[in-house]
Image (cartoon, rainbow, N blue to C red; front, side, top):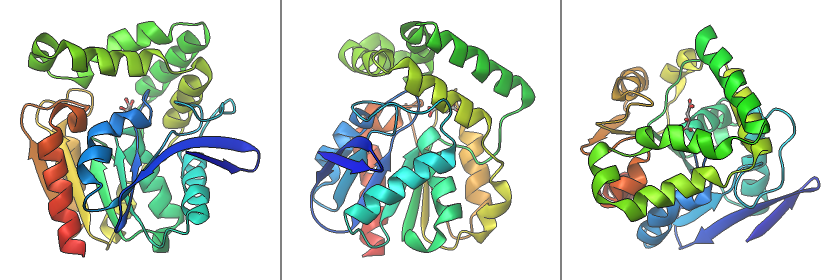
Length: 263
Ligand code: MLT
């Protein structure tokens, strides 16, 4: 489905009935990250999964996309669909966007799901690395970036035993446009530290992490869990960064149980 805001067109999926659940993909991914959640959660929620600006089938991004810019795009989509206080679920960079969203629009979210993400900002070294990777992307090397990220997206066992899934993730990353990839990298490098706001988050929060995530360590999720009062932590075994694709039934069960308690 398509949605336009201030001259920019976005692609999104919208399926199912019930409480609205907005799924925000990570980097360098698109809404097809959520294929098993669109299938598996539509019986318990209205599942909405957009392509962030510069990714998938959404329009190109400007030179830099701050996490706040993605949050504003999400707000425009949520307003246009008349969704009253949806649940926001973000994976990795999607989690950075979810935290930016709740910082900006604290009364517009009923619950939060943070998967394989972190609250802190980047170190100087990581920021410099992101700018180098952005230059690589703009020089036409997105497929190389995809290749180097693949071993962190899935566990070794999955990479060895589930070639169709490995190819699904590799090609999702490799087909992203240089413009969107570079804009996201620059935006992630510039994102603020959100650690101080975590104790202020009073809405129900579910934190999900893959036990084998090497891109964002499960320790990051454990710290977020400690800092957000009354949050729940679920650690999914045999899962790396793209945990919702790798272990969809465990991921969906955690989300279903969380949503059932909200209703
Ligand atoms: C993601 O998976 O969204 C990103 O790799 C996160 C990051 O680079 O910090």
